[in-house]
Image 1 (cartoon, helix red, strand yellow):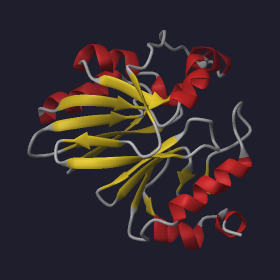
Image 2 (cartoon, rainbow, N blue to C red):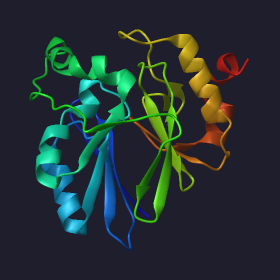
Image 3 (spheres, helix red, strand yellow):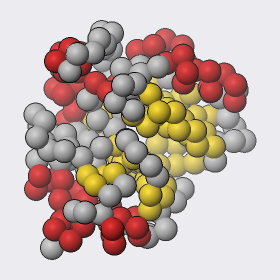
Image 4 (tube, helix red, strand yellow):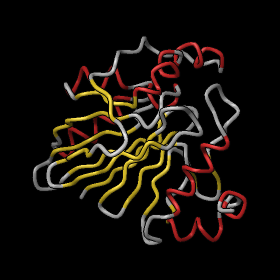
Length: 209
């Protein structure tokens, strides 16, 4: 399994390219900005991108979707509950002082329990609302890609439109039920593990009650 992390955009989003090294089939997760940098890696590694998946619809996670789809022809997927947030992404970007291209509609929607296959690799979709209504995580191959649900030492904020602290607590508990060895690849910041977050995350004691 190949995992490439590209930190993109002014809010330093972790965009992940995950590929089966034998088949060269790949998925791009949270392409928030800088599509040229993302495409440079895809071309350099000779990858065939089949899916573009956004863990949620905030502008910093979706800004390069349109350009990547034009370049790769990949299917763009997200959770249906995130459509309202996603469709407001351009206005949200402007509110923060950033420009963003017009968005494109998703090709399809993922839901709880769906499995995304990337060559011989497979990742299960967890619906993990809280930071946003249609937030998702992808779990498989001893990793979990958490978007802005879980960070190293923290969690996603809930004061944006559609945020819900109670739902975030439940999503957090669910992630903490995974194997402690599971690598956590989050939407911002460094990599961590479930075991470390169970012990050290500043929200762990409160959320696990």
